[in-house]
Image (cartoon, rainbow, N blue to C red; front, side):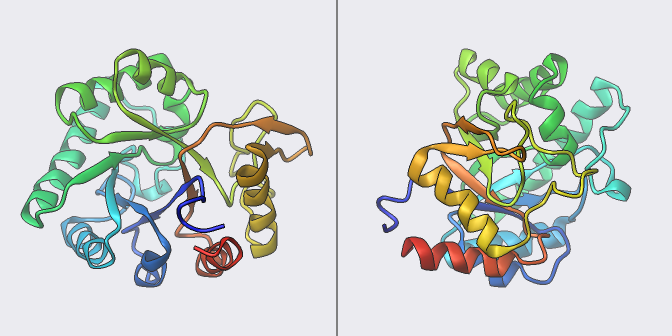
Length: 242
């Protein structure tokens, strides 16, 4: 198999204060850059954008609940208005820097708890889609397959890319296993590769309980903060001859 036949774009969350972004970037098709909500600042955004340009990797904004203390991974009790203002601020900073660096924003991907909650909560999904429609139209929305937000986006003719996770376990309903569980993240490179093989070769996901569920996806994510992220990406490229 080669790039032409590999069915997924490979993306990764970057600009989150780790030191391995430069090692990850050569293996990516797109990247999601933290824009100040859970991590990152103007300097890290600009540096990551420039790194992506160097490697011809598509860039996306990775806005979050404004909660760096919890890295955006806990649902935040915040009013919709406050959340809206924060997301617009994060995305505006990102857009301004992308414009300064003369690079197109390919996509927007909510981070962490916001990503998961917007997949099932109508008000939060609607807020994000309103922002994309009215303030930041054009880029794709990266979102879970068969989620509420993906369905709502399609109804509103907002372009989407359905995303699955190479290094995360899934529940039988297609949701991600909570990070409070010990088996939420897959760190072993061989296990991640087995996970991806089923996605690529069968169009399915094997859940944490061993069941098989069908998927329809366009992009596959490896988390930059996975301790074995570089090894995982190398394994994927080697096995699939990318």
